Figure 1 (spheres, rainbow, N blue to C red):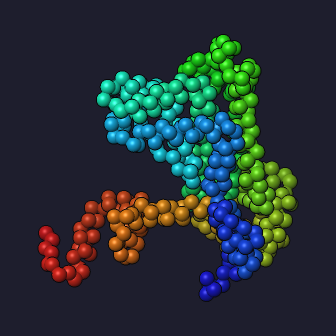
Figure 2: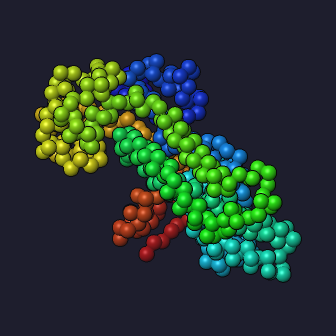
Figure 3: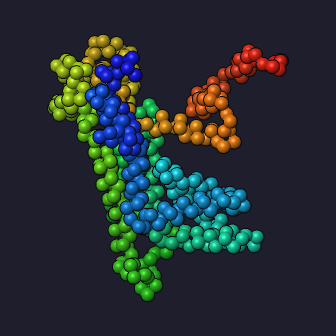
Length: 423
């Protein structure tokens, strides 16, 4: 990178939370920042959200037991095609495999089990009634039936389905390469507001009533049948459990995203706050950008151009995504009329929000370089990886009528020992 004069040009770096990358003492980001002081480190939003959910699942014994039992559903059906046949015969979707490093895979299991609850019960009952099943399969099927009829398991299932319905959307957003850091920050704040909203008596009562309809209300059980740890009122116990799950997530989100305060200057280009900034100029956010990137800007002119932006609604465009606003400034030739403002928007758009898109290339290589393809050459591996990573582009090219003819002609142009004839 020395040939590109990156010391002044590098404004941000984004990695996952591994110590070798993120450590302030000896991590890669610290070594880069020692050379390029403006290279602000951004911990990947997708990895941070993954940590929030994975740590939240380990906070309580009930949560650990629930997710351990849930992963058993996918394992049970993946071990036998005969078991899978019973699952598909009942009209159920296949259960995805669990992946510890990708928490949204776990959310898919939760969603699949919740949406196919009746079908799964019917599947396990059909397996138990089948006379050709082995003893291990029968024993596991009976255990899963007891789980699906257990109030605590179903209560946890619908509690996490409610949470994951929102986090899955945020996951998909923060993993997109085109997403700017400001939009991702706003989505994280909306997720926090959603969890706070669900931490209410009404939301708890709705899940409790839904679970009681599917199983049986534990308050109807005789006292002598309850375990010593469950002698208190069941509804009080499950209310405390529900609130504890949400409280842990509410605590984890601000903790994991605590460094957002160092990026206070993002508020300067937040379209939702332009009206408020017209009344009171955001001095604190303005000083934040000068502190981190002051040598890139003319502070006096930047202040003036921001004030013009906040007061003139015609300059604010359609208030969409940050990249769309940059295109608007370029089309209207405002990039030369208001260079400091254009530079600020370009800076914020440059800061990376996620490294998930980059890491997909490594996941792709793992799928391609399997044991049976171990003798594959480097050139072929690189070409297959490129096709797999850019499969969206390949799909669009395939729609071109002459696409396959051009590929075939290119293939025939190479010198080969055998002579090919293409008609």
